[in-house]
Image (cartoon, rainbow, N blue to C red; front, side, top):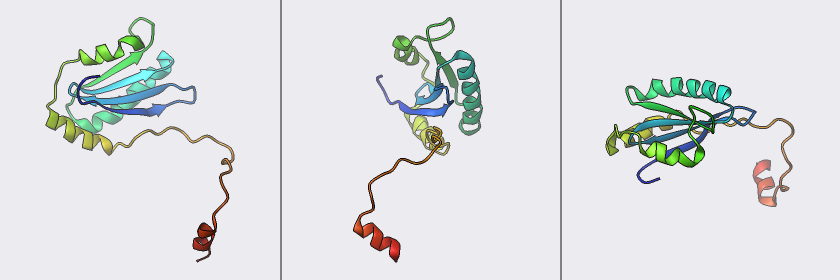
Length: 131
């Protein structure tokens, strides 16, 4: 997409691989949901509520990606986002980006079970561990 867009992918998700992505640009904040429509709408509502506390009166748009009625096809997503009205100046986008970084990035769950085995420790790591 043309312009200054800041994308944070996977800010919310479910074990069924539904996800919400956050896009910051001149129109404001765009939340893009993908996956099952019912679960994605719930995730979008939770994320919208969380973001609204930080951004104040900045517009928040929510878009659901899919082929059903009321959803935007993936092919047309960039065109749909580019057509949104420009509500913010570049300076406001920068300050909003700093405030949004306080929310943190992706919070994808850590899989359960034992951790996979890695390389064995080198000699220097053992020496540091002994001290």
